[in-house]
Image (cartoon, rainbow, N blue to C red; front, side):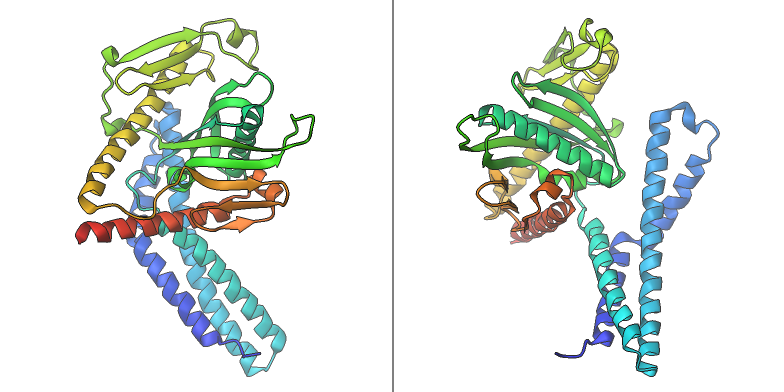
Length: 376
């Protein structure tokens, strides 16, 4: 077995660190940290709790990035010293410890690298995710609910604030659709790679003959609209309906016309909202989601025009982007990236970071190829 080349491994780690630090722009982060700290110290900050939450969340994210960068640089220096010590004393235990630390540093650097790949126009924003059951009847509705739980557990594992905004329950089991919001820096950059059609293959728990069933669910991800986006929606272009909310929530929710459905007439986009107790609050939340979807629609139209100029790109988002197979074997596989695992229960419990990271790398490569094709 060849001897591990510590010199090369440490040199590679240091080069990767410098590449990441350059891409994240440490000076910019420090300047941003100072500005956010100043804003967070303003006496009247919490007069607007929503704005205050955004400021403190952004500050925490920037400080976390700077802390990880500083820690990585320090760890590389420390492991280099550890290797020198181990070699001087011919201490194999110390060298084994150094080898494990090099592997750990490389793993952390790969995680940090993901941050540099989220460079899309809206990647920094919070995300609004809608899950809809597709073909497959009651199994599809159950699958949609499984995906909802998976994403909420993922948010919880990562310490991200997630809020279910609307749920339409199916008659027998599961859900017809659900919309939730994830408030965290780069939530959209992460979750946008989850958009597409998801497929589940399993022995149906709803089939008394125990037959295998294939069902589908669609995941839509949009960035949370901000005041600076200027998405004008004239009243003449929308129809607003109110109705009693369904599902759990108590008498106050289920017996008043607090739920809101907004239909955007020109595009046919429909948004429903019933999480809040007040019709006014639900209307405001529904309008925010509608504006987010119109923002994405505008962005897609701009991208379509650019694509026409650049020519077709071979790799594209397929109708089916991920398969979850529970029978006759256990496997979750992303059909775009090739990422797969046999730990299906862990995935449904929210352990999907490997899939998200692979998706981010895949998307970055698609963007790079698109840019190259546009230049030709």
